[in-house]
Length: 358
Image (cartoon, rainbow, N blue to C red; front, side, top):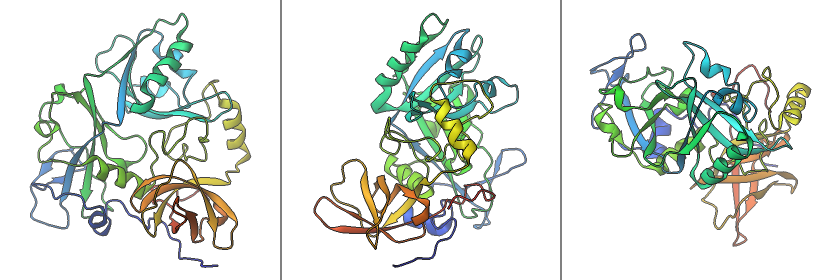
């Protein structure tokens, strides 16, 4: 049957070995970020050094939503609680999904509280390929709300990751040399292993704001996501197909079970309260890059039982929706050329330790 060892954090995102596998570029200079005051100081201790890399995210687009009805308008459309963005001292970034009436995910979004906005104004980040669909979706439900919705083609989204030699240490947020140039500079709300999100005018170079830092390749960012098991965009979360709890929305702080009604709430709340999630979106490592996959591909155990579906990936890394009963087994998928690729899953080390997921 081919059972394989199955441990948490097989693909550690910030460790030395994981960084070598990722092929991430070496930073031009190194610094140690202090957790006490978020300032950096030079250090000769190679065991404590951290590297900062800025990744452009052309696959992510922004919409601006502002007006006196912004909060109640979005409250009925997203899985998370807009009240969190209004509370003083709370983080100004939030992750959420927009669902259809059947409770399936339409779009995964990030919401950022705008600086100096009258009332509550937010930037909404979404997959570039569904930017127009999200805009139409919002306008359908706008009705007579006092809300203005507009695209932001003049802005760019960046991810900033701290690649540390010591994964047990959580890096403090780097300071910006010119913070007034950043429209958004917030920790990624999904997990600390995703670093920080930065929104700038397109003509602004992030390397002018974060020193020392170097610019990375978008594909390396995607590999990092797949290595630690964080879904993003329509390939990982097919619209109208993905279910939010199977997609680990709870683990990414993307849902509130105490807020009022929103589209798709009923099925999601019922599933949550039964406590039964039989499939999970999990990071996988494949024996070789699969060839010619189009959309979801069926997974099987070595005995031929259905085990889930492979969603997407880069090279030998990816995300698969796996039946938890088979998550510890070696699985197989068939490529378009009839070749067979094996894969094995891992439990991300950022998932809660007190929750039994498999």
